[in-house]
Image (cartoon, rainbow, N blue to C red; front, side):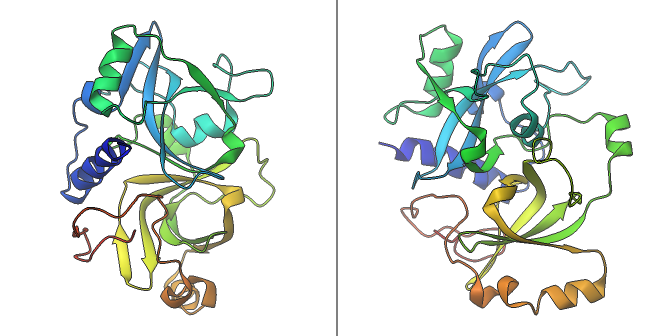
Length: 262
């Protein structure tokens, strides 16, 4: 029955692999109840100690930006800083709503918008290893913030469970407070595996404590060096997907033209 949740994730991965640029209908994919200047949005989470992917609704403050539906802060910023006001308890844990395992996600979202009572849980952001949303593009595109941000460049990452990732990220200063930079934002992530290179989501948000190694690649020389370092070579990488999904019912072909890792 949990497969209805997995099918929702796989449908999103399919949209990404087909190169869709526009967000699908929010009501069918990620939008829960709206509460004035706040709304609930569905996200995917890899949680410490949980062997399967978890879908959860989190409460965001809406930003009113021209041309962007349900604009909000970046998921990485949200999970890192938890600014007030927010639905948190005194220990800083988030309030989240979990869909029943037997219920398809579009129906669950519709029921929440209709006012059905949903019992909340508390979620410790520090125990989130990986997070992602169901958007095709970052829902916050503020020109002056983007212009003032540090440049994006290639990075290689290795998680404590042996996944090897590469993608474009901002550099996180070595002395940056963890409270402000708990999550690394990886754009256009690719997972390196012994079977090949696999592309998935537009953006991944990875807890820095879940990362064992991080290497910035600013030059061709550095790229050549990194690709020869043992922790980043395909032979040393985990064959399992960083998203804890069960194997699909039938082989699926990813953007790289190979079977997706499971």
